[in-house]
Image 1 (tube, one colour):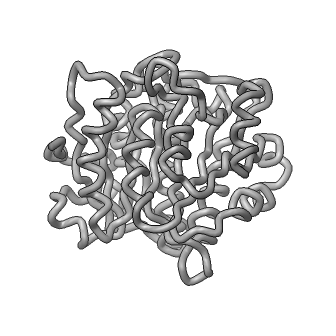
Image 2 (cartoon, helix red, strand yellow):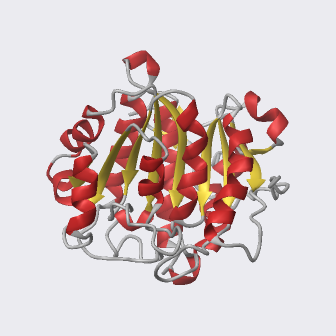
Image 3 (cartoon, one colour):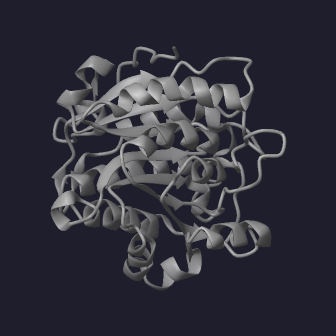
Length: 314
């Protein structure tokens, strides 16, 4: 069975004792202790399924470094706490994508059995399948995917980073919304595929016009028990996130993404009548392609905003 490697020690860049950063509060833990935390980080260093430029296997380390240097305080929610790092999934080497997905799922199934919300650090988008698939048997599941693309390509020669949501639909996914999709970045056949399955597409222009209305549209069809949230960092404009496999213009600003994530996380909480948040991921951070760590920093702050909203911030 694929397991988890022991997490490294987190570093704290600031010497000011008042500067509490994630490096101060994230604790190293084993899977057996995951129930003691609100959220647990799990790295997935893999990019063997990428259609375009590779580099996402280095994403987990870069996201951790950027998050460690991020302060914990959110003005509305207060400081983020009760987060642990479980280490990286021990991804099998020299295996095909389908075999990797099967192997990784053996680890994610164990993570999902804990009471903590898993936060998966990608890694490429193909691992959305093993990250979310274990949830399909636990009641109705919806996914909100922040992405420039629909990622429901046909499986021709096997799975890729462009096929995860076709795989999940075929496995029984109940509801799916894409937020931040770009015009001229998808094929008509795949737009039709999603439309036939009552998927919701919220374009980057709609987010730019009104973030609140865009999120409302994404959640409107989520009559489900559980909600999984994915962020492919190519949803951001290429200027904000150059370190991804397929950077393109016309994407979300970081501020739009952060606010949208807070709205999704807070409005979907059980006490507000929404589905339970059962997982979160940030994928396609490729440090070798990045410029000035912009993409890793944006991904780290996406994690911070989401965790703050789960705790009550908005």
